[in-house]
Structure formats: C-alpha cells, structure tokens
Length: 207
Image 1: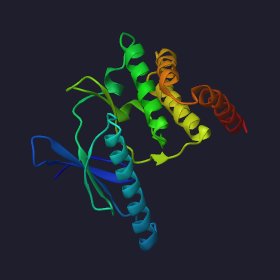
Image 2: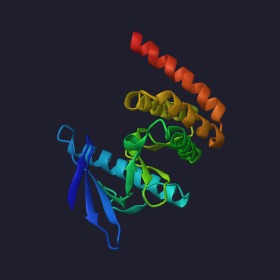
Image 3: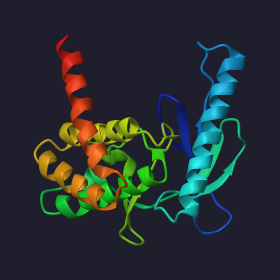
C-alpha cells in the first residue's frame, strides 16, 4: 500500500483492488495520549459508524465511495472515486450549477438522517466517469434527524465556501440552498434554524 495522505485521525493509503479499480484504505491510528482501552473503543466505534453510513448510502444509490471491507477496529477500505476536487474547479462560470447539485446531495444525506460534519469542497469530487458530484470522507459523520444538526451542517458548508471561495461564496451558497430546498424534507424549518445557529455563533464570537 502507498500512503497518499494523513490527517489528525487517520492515514490514507491506496492499494490495488482485485478488479481494475484501486481501493482507498483509511487506517485510524492509535493516539498515545489516550488510555489504550478507550482509544481502541473510540477507533472501533468510529470505524463501524463510518462503514454503516457508507453501506446505507450505497443502498440508497447515493454518489459516495462504496465500502469494500472493514475490520471493525481501525481499517476501512472503500472504492476510489477518480475525478477533480470541487475546491479546484469551482469558479464563477460553473458555481451555480455545481453548488445547486451539492445542495441536492446534502438534502439527500439529511433525508437519510445522515449528518456529514465536514462539508468542505475538499470533500467533494466531480467524477471523471459520470460527471456527478460525489461526497467524500464520512469520518465525522453521524446519524441524526434533528433540525439543529442539519442546520449546523449547512452552516459549516457556508463557512467553508466563504473561507475557500470568498469571491463567489454568496452565489455558491445561494445555489446550494436552492438545490437543498427542492429536495430536503422540512427545508423551511432547517433553513430558518440556520439563522439561530449563526446568531449564536456571532454572540459567542463577540463575548
């Protein structure tokens, strides 16, 4: 296996699959500052949860990596999605179309009671195979039907757009909300809750 990335929680490897496609392997490595038993439990819980989410998304036909294997402890193998990161191709000429599709995809996640937790354009890929937007990296994802959790997810998307794509972020975010409204259950309540989330953030920031 060849290491291709490392984050705070895991190392990412690429290895040859049994077919033509390569497999991406995520290995949640031990944290020395945690008690061993607690560390093993946390890594196992997060690995199993991510695997369960990928399985549910695959059954729903959602554009995300398909689960290849897991050891239920720290290792997670998944399909490699080849294409271009949205962070690298998002521009004024295509932002409305791409971000509307992103909003629709987030709505589909939320309709399946899945909160992504890290909705940045680094975790989104336009597939070179079918041109669809795929959502990647469900390491911080969890199951929830709460309006609040869905609103926070969208607020994090807004912050990511504003930070990375500051010249066009408003158009991007408005297009994402348009797509979200068309597909999401309880979209009016969720979007209204975003205002409360933002007010709370401003209050904390000013305190």
